[in-house]
Image (tube, rainbow, N blue to C red; front, top):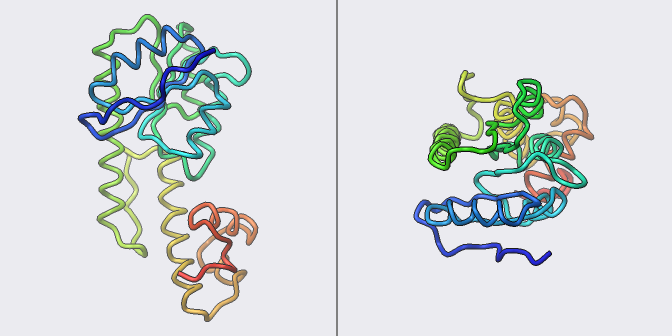
Length: 216
């Protein structure tokens, strides 16, 4: 299958969206609908979508549920379980209209669930709402220092709360490593991680190097 060129010209919003759907006509429709406002990247299966996200994270993902191989539910779960990607809003789109299907999508961490056929104006409004919510959360991050905790907020999802909690713990750990007073194991305990191995894994994802190699 010949892929649609991935990147559109610079969009008015400065935001980027990854569209994932094995139906090229649907993908082209969504690209045409959104490209005036967003940079749109298109992938036709979950595997290539995850590979793309690893190379170039986006601001939002729109994924069909029914795809060959890994479906949209599994793609959403993979995104939301990755500490580097879990902050990205995921909108699942599907023809499955039962409440059970919608609950399944939300249980996988989806931020929103849209059934086909959908109103294009509704989808665009939903995208704006999700991106506005993300911007508000990022503003909270920028306003807080590396050692300050953000007060719990009902507007943050469990994934967002975990992401923020780990980020401030990791930043504090980086400060302690630079001080040179404690071992890596001690720093893991001091910053509240359940085990040194989990600490090391998350630290490397955040800073690109294991704690033992971090220079600051």
